[in-house]
Structures are given as structure tokens and as C-alpha cells.
Image (cartoon, rainbow, N blue to C red; front, side, top):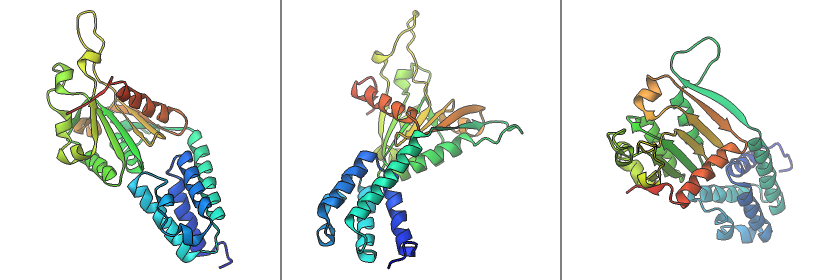
Length: 272
């Protein structure tokens, strides 16, 4: 086919965009380099070197799907053209990520001043958008079945999930139930749970420890949610809660890396 607007060309471009848009730039570069290194359809067919350029099993399936569609439907498109298209989409996505946008998120009485999204709606969207990794931080977790189900679905599609929680022991009575247990057995199979041990917390003059009181979520280092809301039924439905979603810019990745470093330095430690 010579028509670049054919349905097959459009579908190939959609598959390229779907893949490149969710990968870090350096991973797309490695994938493109593997494709260019073959230059032969026979060599690239079923090539584990290309598929294994990305570590995530779900993304590997998408790479294989892209290669199969390309070879079976548009073999006249050269390997160099495919690699260039991947790099072009990745660069465009990187520029989009550098453009920061912010949105206010609210649970509580509505006004006529501005239309605001509810806390649970914003958090569910962030979880569903995650393609590789997801960080969730909350003081309390209780009776949020829809949030937990979304986390389980993310884990099943290959997202690496880290959850930072307060624990009954570390809270010194401020929390009377185990938040990790409250999330259920299924999510405990998939996610890594962390807390802030008392020995690592500062003390007030009268001997009181600080609390793990932050509430936040980060998807793929590119979308950051900061909120007053705990992951509880009341916070999602009854309380007056205020937060913000930040897309793009440096802040989401900085928070993601900040918590990762706290784990590496053992400021945050893994729960049982």
C-alpha cells in the first residue's frame, strides 16, 4: 500500500504511540537501537533481543504485538522508519510531560464558583493510568473497596506498587487497626508495604513521636496527587477534603524518587 493514510498505517501508528508514550525515553532509545541493529525482517521476527529491551512483561507483550503487526501487515515500512517513529513519539511525550498542569480535587459541599472532581474519582484515574510503577502514601486505610480493586487491577497488568502506611504500633495509639490488613489479602500478595519506624522519627520536647501523616500518590513519576484525604470511606464520601493533581514537570518524579531514597536509606522499612 502506498497510501500513508490507510487504515493499516493508522493502526501501526496507534500501536507505536501506545507503546512509546508509556516508556521512559532511554528505554525507547534502547528499543529503537535494537530494531535498527537487525535491519532485516527475517532477523527481527520473534527476536527476543528486541522484546527483552523492556523489562515489564505487559510491555513486552505490546512490543511483540507491534512487531507482529508491522511484519504481517506493513513489511514495506523499514526498520529505520519504525525506530524513528518510536523516537519521535517519545520525544513529543517528553515535551508534554515537561509542561506542567494542575487540577484542584475536592470532596465536600459544591459551589457554583468552579466544577471540581471528587477525591476518589481523581485517585482512581491516577491508579488506572499507571503503566509501570505506582506509589501510594496514606495515614489510614479503611473500607475503600473500589480503590483496592483498582490497585489489584494495576498489579495484575504489571504495575509495581509501593504503599507507605502508618501502623498501629508506630502510631502509638493514634491508629487502632492494621491498615495493611484492612486492604485485604489480594493486594498484600502484589504490593510492597512500608512504614516509618518509631526509631527513625523525631521526638517532641515532651517525648511524643511524629506521625506518618502524608497522603499522596504518584503514577510513573509523571502524575502526582497530594490530598488531605486518607484512604477511608469517610474521606472519599463524607468529609471536606482538598487536594491537587499535578501532571508533568519535575515535581511528580521528585516525590517518587524522594520516597524511593527513603526506602533505600531504610528511613522507611518494609512491613511484615
